[in-house]
Length: 275
Figure 1: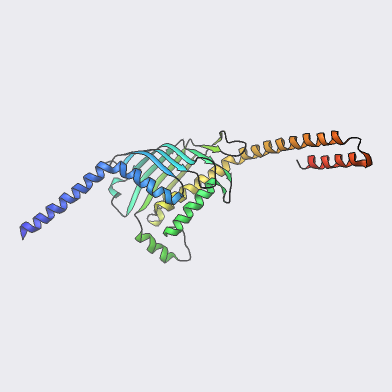
Figure 2: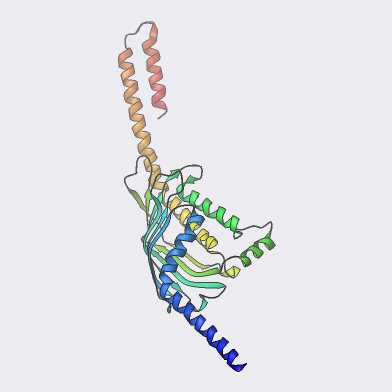
């Protein structure tokens, strides 16, 4: 009997070691697969990650070449492009129900802001996509049925807490009919702390949603000035075209009988007044 028990314990230990070795050997490939597999249904866009370089022992490292596509209906090729971001995990919590991420530091991201569409902008549409996924998964805010929400969260995947998220040195590419060639604006520094801590952990979708809310708000504020300039330029261009057109009309109708020349001039002045 003792031999059977000892043999069973050895089998369990070997199995655990084999599992740890597999995770250790394939951690970064698993991270890339997880980001792409998770990101696509959450954002409803193309999501790619070129590589991951995270140490299993320290839990620290970086992700490279993160690409998040643009929502359907927008012409820009992407909404986010990140060269690299640094990640520090609490390695002791990797196997726990609540995984603690010490920090996520994103440097020099390129964010595309494209106004228009039903949502008002591509970033807001991306936010709406995340909202829809979180609500469907049971991880969104549902004040009417908190018991069902808590139950859904308990049955779902592991929750996370992020101690700090920073986004610095970012740029916003503004895509409009007049600025598709790369008009940019600086993205203000964004910092979030204790994400999900007060709730004992939240889903990855809800964590992404909280970060996105900050990004959308900061981007909308940052592009307000440049967009106003673009609208002013468009107004001037259209106004000049109308002015040239009415001048030609007035020149062509001078000397017409029955006061038609005066009526043409009145029409031209009204058109100019619109701009």
